[in-house]
Image 1 (cartoon, rainbow over the protein chains, first blue to last red):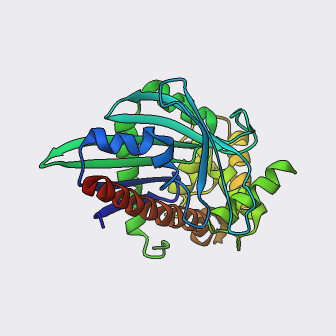
Image 2: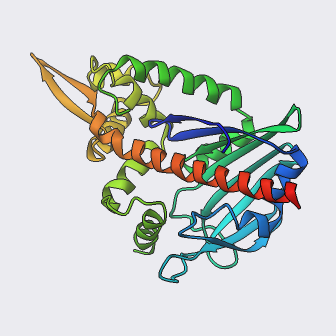
Length: 169
Length: 126
């Protein structure tokens, strides 16, 4: 199974997952763009996802639900696709929604940024940055492209948390 | 009420069903603001009171006091008396709930990546 590294920041509520896969970026892109492939990995095995819509273009939408072990459907969720650059990157928001994909404004949005990069030898590095901020914060961040600023902030907090021995591991 | 129920279903789906939904909601809400996240970071050292904390921000003392109160209710900071001073200190126990959420997300993503690798392996063979 692929080697995966994970960086977490409990104050900023962010997490970045980075992995290397034995496939081309184009092939990895298909895992996200083809709903039948996406369904096989998005939901946990005990809660498989069903995508009723998937349009992986800027301004596009995905609508899905998951099915629990008792056959109960979870409420609908949706993705709002903010930006794409196939096969290199996707920026989206994952949120609770109704069956038309309209977000439920009362619930926090998960922001996701996916980067897919060819590292040669038929291998691809994929990173997924997850954020759990307020909708306004996410809007601002996406508008200003504050990726570098974000990375720096995370580094600073890591250092700060490392100084405090009592921090939960 | 709808939000509350959805939160419960969500927590079941992501394996956090044991958490108190209200507490989870509070921690989530409290950390959703950049100033409050900054206060939590600063208060890790636990040297400053509300007055000193307020000096770091361009907003009013009352506004900072309000942010501290939100964090206090969420169990993310506590006030401690040191002699005559009262300092604001990050309650690391309170951050655990956020840590657990991220830990669970890590598990979810590790599982997803393993499934991705399996799919890629299959298409390679065919």
